[in-house]
Amino acid sequence: MHELSLAQSVVEIVEEAARREGAARVESVRLEIGELSHVEPESLAFAFEVAARDGCARGARLEICRTPGHEMRVRDIDIF
Image 1 (cartoon, rainbow, N blue to C red):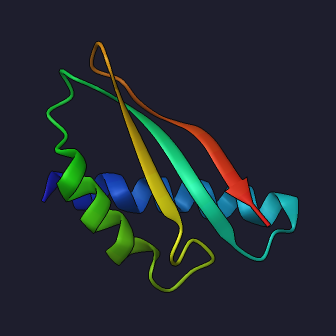
Image 2 (cartoon, one colour):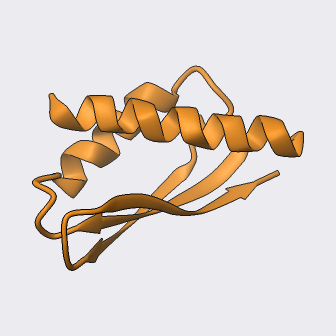
């Protein structure tokens, strides 16, 4: 599943950001996903839950915003 590898990469980025900031947990993650990226938001959301289940992003709310183009990026991370 393409979305699972993407979700694992997002979780790695998010957890690294949390470590840098000394945060214990991640509250929410906002992603921008291009309409032409061939990423299914529902599948990515499910995969994110699975990938995040053992780390500080466990239970984090994933917000997905569709944008024009192919890119996918982490827009914001709310950490505590």
